Amino acid sequence: MLRLDDLQVFVRTADRGSLSAAAREIGISPALASAAVKRLEGELGLRLFVRTTRSLSLTAEGTQYLEHAREALRWLRAGSDALAAGKDSFGGTLKIAMPSDLGRNMLLGWLDAFQRRHPKLHYQLSVSDRLADMVRQQVDVAIRYGEQDDSSLIAMPVAPANDRVLVASPAYLQQHGPLLSLDDLPRHNCLRFALEDGLHDRWTFYRLPQREQVSVQVSGNRSADDAELVRRWAVAGLGVAYKSRLDLHGDLAAGRLLALLPEVAGEAAPLHLVCMHRAQVTPVVLQLRDFLREQCSLLS
Image (cartoon, rainbow, N blue to C red; front, side, top):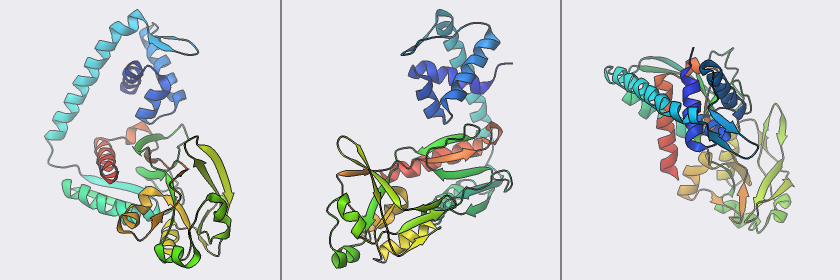
């Protein structure tokens, strides 16, 4: 039986000319994308792509089938839109896990706005920097930072270009002096984050324009397993922090924190909306993903 997900992977791969590019856009691993194409080829009994080590191109049969696949997806989307238009609002309870700082200071406001669009929708929220056990906690969606390496999960990009930024308050810099280079960092009081995997006291950066990777061992008199505490300490002038740019957006805009060393790029910290399996990617989850993407794009 043909699967909708496999058709989507096929069409996106044909459009991008790359399995890995299609996988990134859809939010799955390249291995899952490759398996989807192979499964579709098996169902159809023909080859859709010619693969070499350097390129991927449609076969004659693939080119012919592509238009049928596009049309099928278009009709399915039209049917879904028609059903959604016939409803006043999404209903039910959505169980969401989110990180502490972004959750409290941005996501809660965004979720309030999303709920105003869909007043029949209820939330059950879990706010923590520890990764939620999505099975035990029966979480529908998790909002997570970082690359999502677990190929069994469905990871949908929300803010793929987000990165970490080195910051301090004006009061801290006035008292302790400017940070002129990464070589100065070990002499500053660095506010560190700690979780089950240990204390994050080695910070990685990339010197521009060559993006030369540099790791710096840092130390300080405070650490916490709550990212919001680290941000509050930085705003209070107690040290230097290295955090997600999304977490710091309001403080940077208001001048409570200053971005340091603009000639240095921070580590990537992409934001994803994560589900355990495809069945959880419901219309309301897709609308939430699109809404969060819109909110994040307004910040850039």
